[in-house]
Length: 599
Image: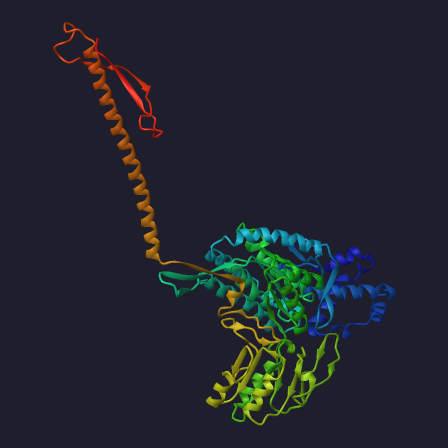
């Protein structure tokens, strides 16, 4: 990644006397106090006093060496194909980008990790042209074969699980176990999609018409656009891309602007699998870019389905733009999730669940718990540090406060008291969002009311578990301002395909049609045969009549002495065929055969 101490010595000759010493001191200090080692490092005066090095000569080398040693923490990035400068567009099987250069930072200390060159609109257009052509190839591949490609993608993720998990943690800011867990979710989605590739079944529907049958046939859409958010920079891509690919669609992915390295690293793994199988690279196209790329995807009529994850405000604009061109949108938007703790709840279980639900993923999950029935007040301050940290905060507040109706993407939990289950359900349903909800109780009647038609109006309705941590086997998504989209399991795959209803005659009627067809050809053959037979018979009779006439004429023209005592013998070896009149006026072509007597 960064230059080694020996390279520093070559580039900065004044440091030749002490680069090794600097590196050793910095490494020792970093190992003893990795969070903030440099307040323990000897001051520049130490070097001027003991090594007689001018102060002006030592300040810059110390700072440069500090950057070199810190970047050693990022050396794992080369294991997933990343460098200090990266191209942010995978277009038609090649890495290219002609847009601005941005820096991606570690949110825990705001230090630059690497640079990424974003794509331009011209790069986007080139990518979509290639993707449109690749779609013709990919949708023709049998679904189980497409599943095999996705299986190989899952294996590629398995091989780089730890590296990718560290990258997610580094660039997004979540803890390492959650970073690794997010990558594992993509692997799980690949496994799920492989099995699904053999189960993209249609339905057989009884028809109201006699001797008819209806079928449902599912076909690919062509291209699916996926726009993901920073909080789950690769998991949401997995939810969408794994299903889209096995369903026969190409994928166009725009990752979050703040996590471009994840976008590039994931794309490199997918690209290697496609290349290994001699498939067009444009089957999977990815872009690192700003809002203009997202707007282009939303407006592009070549993309029948756009999956967007983000805020309700931006999601509404995406939906309107896609709808104006009669496209389909799959929206995963804001959540404002409540946990109801009833008086009979297991408090220990509830507290552990609320803690994870409220502060897991730094409080930046769409399923993060933000509303609770209880009263604990704490937090509310920014933590002074080089990074971006706040104290987890619990606020007692009125349910009618306007701020309660909004999604606050931070570890802030609003606490409200309830008097009954009915009031809890009312408060849960009173916000515009409808993603996830949970209740802690031991009473069966409360559970069944909570999950019933007059209970929670959310897409995820949990009992005695947190609001977050959804499994891939079920459809993930919510109602109301959350967008109504469904991703991952259950029958979510149907959103990535188009449905055709096919009506036809039943099988025995088809057989009857075949029999009728065969009978028709048999009748035609019989008709032609009979005509040929009749024509042959008429020719025979005409020939016979002609021969008789010729025989009489020859007999009448002879004198009695010339007449033979035996009938003349006709020599069939000497004959001629001449046209005759159409005696019947039927437009038929007739011939008269003239035969002479044997010499």
